[in-house]
Amino acid sequence: MDHYHELKNMVTSTSSYSYSRLATAMGTRNSNDQDLTQLLLEERESPLASRPKELDQFFSQVYEYFSEKGLACLLTCQVLNICTIVFTWIFSGFFMLCINWTALGQCSRCMSEYVSEDCSHFCVDIVTSPHGGAFYVTVVSAYLLVLLVFLGYRVLVFGKDLQAWFSMQKFFNHDLGISDRDLMTVEWALVTSRLIELQKRYPAKFIKEFHDEQDITSRIMRKDNYMIALIDGPLQGAMHLEHPLLNQLMGPKALTHTLEWNIRFCVIEPLFDSEYRVDPRVLGSPHLLQRRLYMMGAVNLALSPFIIMFIVIYFTLKNVQRYHADPRSLSTRSWSLYAKYTFRKYNELPHRFQRRLQKAMPWAEKYVQGFASPLLSIIARFTAFVCSSMLAILITLWIINEQMMKLDFYFLGINRNLYWYMGMFAMGLGMARSFIIQQGQTTDTHSVLLSCASYTNYLPQRWRQLRLFSPEVYQEFTDLFMLNVAVPGVHHSIFLQEMLGVVVTPFILWFVLPEKAHDILLFLRNCTVEKQSVKSICSFADFSNVGFCRHGTSRYGTE
Image 1 (tube, helix red, strand yellow):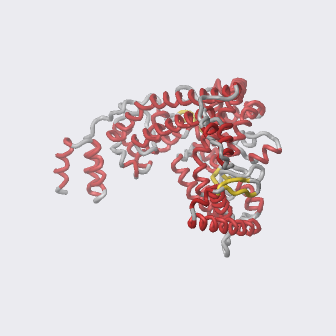
Image 2 (cartoon, helix red, strand yellow):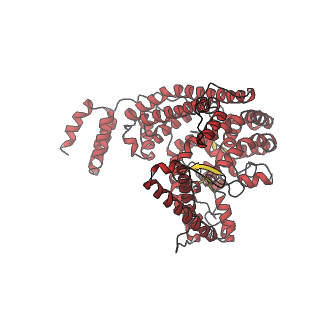
Image 3 (cartoon, one colour):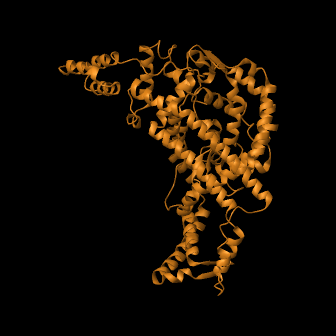
């Protein structure tokens, strides 16, 4: 312990961040250096952070700063998100108002026919000033105006949060002794342990009421816990319209981001007062909830055309290059939003939940591949052979004489040059290969689904009764693990579900949820408990003995 007195003298000349890291490093050498760590912590200055006024907001900002890995990543992410909206706004205006599609078609036909006349008088007018019919220009202008208002809102939110992020950087670096570089590797447990240590040492200057790890998580997850309970409770089966065509296109359990946002805005956000207690006036006023649902239904209906336009344009800009370069990515799958709420545990923070879903993804993909159609695989092999043969011919022509690729070729009513056909055959080859089953490839779907369930923690008794390798279980599983893009009416897809959700959400807010208003508020009243440190929380997220006695079961894991 000769280094003990040397380091003790160095304490006053080192920054709080330096001695925190030094204490951590020395603490890993041997257990005798725990006294040194205690000494260094005791000689720290008072925390820079003043007592937070709203603890929910404070702990949420702490978690956001941790999950985004520091100030640089946080600012860069927010700035680039705003730049993405700006680029989409500029591109949308140019694409829909400044391109003369009639002139573009005439220019293309003129150049493809190899006539002697000059095509410049067609091609020079492709890019013009805003043009189009009055109704078309009005709709596009309204869309651009709505998007501009949304952009202004994001900029205002960014400016409002900017000071809080800089303050949070000081809090992490000085008070918690965690630098932005350390955030790349530290776990959330270290952050909560430092928060608890600060509370113990500075109760009068930091947080008055002591919060342990469970209390901190309960404040961060307060609203999400209520959403999980609602989706699994009174909203079960009330998130779609009973229509055969919609059920065929969207699936039986369709929860879209548009509907999720409206439920949060109408039900969750008004639920709490300024002290984060459930407001009894809200619980006793189902007519106020119905009024909010009707109002938001009208707002959603008015904005639905512009939301659809934005979704289509943003999806195109984001994914077209990826699908063109790798057509097999068209068959990729993701967990639906309903599946995420079904799998998520109470008080489970987002980064831990995402980690669990990522671990389940390979097993889910392997389970789906176990039901690949052998007949479709045979057809795909033949299609891949034809596309590969045509590509070989085109590549040979390109090697012999590159100028030949510019010649137009008329085939099945399509008149394009050979470069265009090369791209089409390459896409067809990639799509065909995604449906081919490798010879000798077999999958024990029973054990694979059990491995997947070990991460999702979702294995209904109905599945076990039907046998895990049955087509019925496969159909219900693919309603949770959906294709990102699919053929309408053949497979359910997340993209189509989100698109139709924009149109369907206003009618759900008008005709379905208002009838559930009384049941929703009664459910919220019955599943709310009070804790002195965190105020009102969802009783399902109460992991105390009282909560376990109220909702626990001795048959857990057997049903």
